[in-house]
Amino acid sequence: MSKQRYIEAKQRWAEKQTAAGVRPRDTAASGRLPPGQKLTAGFPVLDLGVQPDLAPADWTLTLDGLVEKSAVLTWAQFNALPQVEDVSDFHCVTAWSKYDCRWGGVAFTTLFELAQPKPEARFVYFTSYDGYSTNVPLDQCLDDDVLVATRFDGAPVTREHGGPARIIVPKLYAWKGAKFVKTISFLASDRLGFWEVRGYHNDADPWKEERYA
Ligand SMILES: Nc1nc2c(c(=O)[nH]1)N[C@H]1C(S)=C(S)[C@@H](COP(=O)(O)O)O[C@H]1N2
Ligand SMILES: [Mo]
Image (cartoon, rainbow, N blue to C red; front, side, top):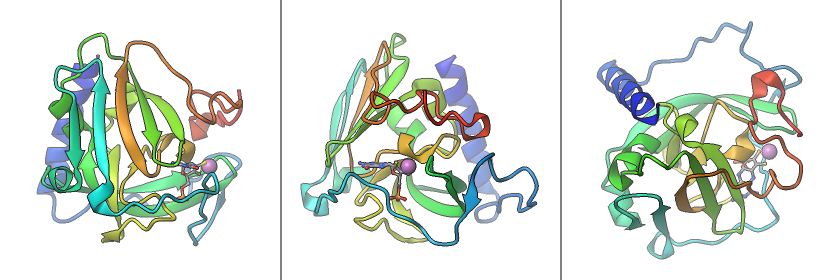
């Protein structure tokens, strides 16, 4: 299953990259805003009250768990990986949504390729430099719009929005995207993250309003 999703995602990336520039999203108003959400033009900041001050030189990204090749990537090594851009909508569980976020960085599929998760790996657990954590099934991480973002609208992701690097999982509520990401662990069984142990819904689909368990 994961293998198939991975191959499909790679194909979609190839199609996107060969198209001229980034393909704009369907801007039709209808059917775009998930139930119970309000559109915002700004970009609110949601965090634990701590915004780690990480110089790129101090930042590393660790890939570990059930993988053939664990890795600790430096900022330079991370940025040498193939770069992609993707435009997606952002839905926070506190009922605001932001359209057309242009994120740039490394596709999750690229990290999958690098780490080579074992067949038993079915879940991904993210930890962050501020102590945050969250969990997403591996299959969903392999969607072609999931990235480790280092750029927003062409500029580096700011500290308040999770720089130097944050995860983006557009199809799920935004708490599933770890800001200040530090470690990506591939696991055989699910492990609940910071908000998931505090009563947030484990699946977090905005279209099903999976806000709280
Ligand atoms: N490390 C970390 N990541 C996090 C959070 C956090 O507190 N710490 N908050 C989550 C929540 S609830 C949301 S809505 C988004 C907010 O991202 P923003 O501050 O860029 O809007 O980040 C998510 N990722
Ligand atoms: Mo949130």
